[in-house]
Image (cartoon, rainbow, N blue to C red):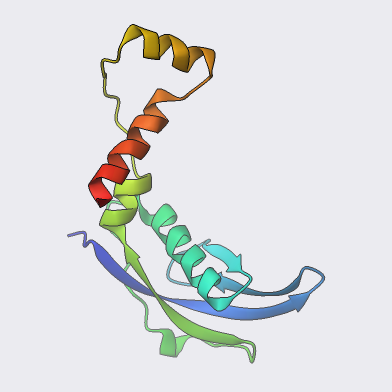
Length: 131
């Protein structure tokens, strides 16, 4: 059974190279997941999005591994990332096709101004949902 709130351990690596100082994030738990951030906080936020992106279409979410069994280098540490899949899927998940009716004048104006009506509608609905 899928759960809405997941917590996964990740490996945060402090990096200093030609790109400068930043934090890389990987997870043996989520194969192929790699992201980074300038700060630890930014790296964790990017890790949350990366994990959600990678597991959103899986029939079952990966089991949480025991990070005490991971071998870490001196510049690595384990961090725990909370992923709210219900919130993520609501914001970025699968889209569905839905027909809406709008006044012809607005439709013509949107076409002339190259406005994506679906995008505007989704944004407006999200704002209403958060209010």
